[in-house]
Image (cartoon, rainbow, N blue to C red):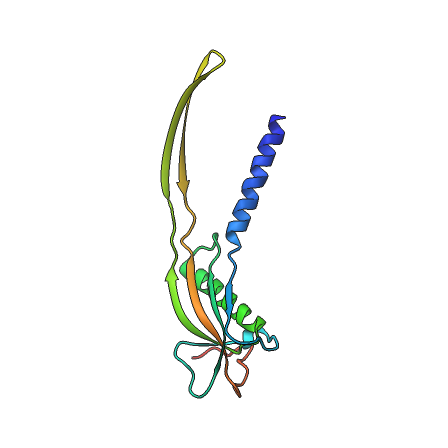
Length: 158
């Protein structure tokens, strides 16, 4: 019986950690979606492109709960934004904001005692949160008419 309780507790904690690591991308549609494209064809813009473009959706996302290292966090955030933009047929992303998320990290200590069935007990514990702080980003998925597709495997710039 005790092993079943321990197993269930472990299973529930594992599922909760897995769900926490799967941060989703928020999508607010501003115009009808277009035909999906490949995520690698989505260009990143830091300033609005010259000429006309159509805003399709506002996107927000965050890196996963178990992503370590600033570059890995940024890569994950940009990948999620590109995938979301490609799903709605946007061939560009107008980056709006990139920031560090909130982390409730720290350490805690607990001590307890009690009496049950004529016996006394005392216990204590220490908890430490080592979850990395997520990176968050917001962008506008845009469609730029006549824009050539971004190269799938661009050659390195020297």
